Amino acid sequence: MNSFVMTLNRHILEQERLYPQATGAFTNLLIDIALAAKAISHEVNKAGLLDIFGAVGTQNVFGESQQKLDVMANDAMIKALNFSGTLCTMASEENEDLIPIAEEFPKGKYICCFDPLDGSSNIDVNVSIGTIFSIFRRVTHEDQPVSLQDVLQPGYSQVCAGYVIYGSSTMLVYTTGAGVYGFTLDPDYGSFILSHPKIKIPSKGKIYSVNEGNYYKWDEGVRNYVNWAKQYGGPDGAPMTGRYIGSLVADFHRNLLKGGVFLYPADSKNKNGKLRLMYEANPLAFIVEQAGGKASNGTQRILDIQPQELHQRTPLIIGSKEDVEIAEQFVQGKRTE
Ligand code: P6P
Image 1 (cartoon, rainbow, N blue to C red):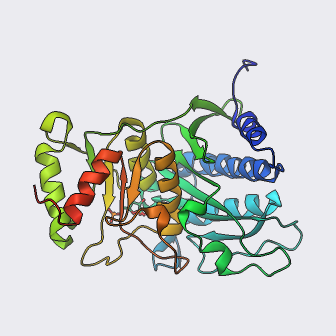
Image 2 (spheres, helix red, strand yellow; image 1 turned 90 degrees about the horizontal axis):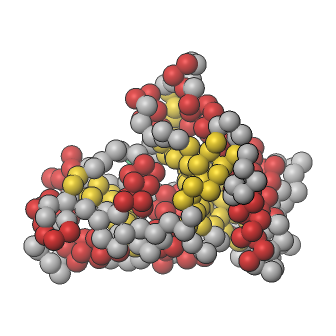
């Protein structure tokens, strides 16, 4: 391998040097998350060859049937995070309650909230899916038992957020608050190599991404925005292009690199939207703001929302700053065309 290649491990160590108070615990945590990502990528990429398709006959906290890969990915993340010895607790979209750190492992001051395999219903049709993670520092004293108070922190308290996209290649994208960096997995070496340094999202894009099958369940403001976007929303008043993969990480990643806006609004069926604040909206909002973009629930900055419940949902409008701000004006009724 070229000696000047920047691997994820080297990059994390370099980032650690930027923070004199860094203890290295954080470095170990990120390296172990990357290890879990490699294991998940390995399984996802051979899913078509093994009896790993389909449901396991159980349901997650949302009553959604769990795919075998969901369970595998969840186990991989829990094992890696336990092993890191850096967490005082963890929370998974697949588990109703907080997941205690296994007795045999040391504990630390961090908390990780994760969606182990977002979009997994797409796996059997070979559509890109992803893992999303969000890291906080505990707020209670280490002599105290860990509580929900340590986990239900607003998104602006995150110390790190990232996602892994299992697509034509496996990429890990993360921020610690000093910019957004993308790493592509080199399967020959099993290393994540820096391929997208300092990612910045265009201030305005020409892509809008929303499930228009929900059109007649939306509020009028959302309908007005989508009608406007497909007529005048693009650069120079041209129509925007519609792109919707139905896998949040894939839709978000495309807009992060190319510009545009993703919306999953509230509707008459999902009064608070479908996506989860702690496992999806918060980490992607931290990343998009670090890349110069914006994320809101239509009226409030995602990162300012004070969580009330572990699995609470939120409407989400996320992407290029100008596109999100225009969508907010329509959603708030300040604009109708
Ligand atoms: P719909 C996948 O199930 C997911 O959680 C996200 O990855 C995706 O953006 C969304 O749901 C798609 O939901 O209702 O459009 O199928």
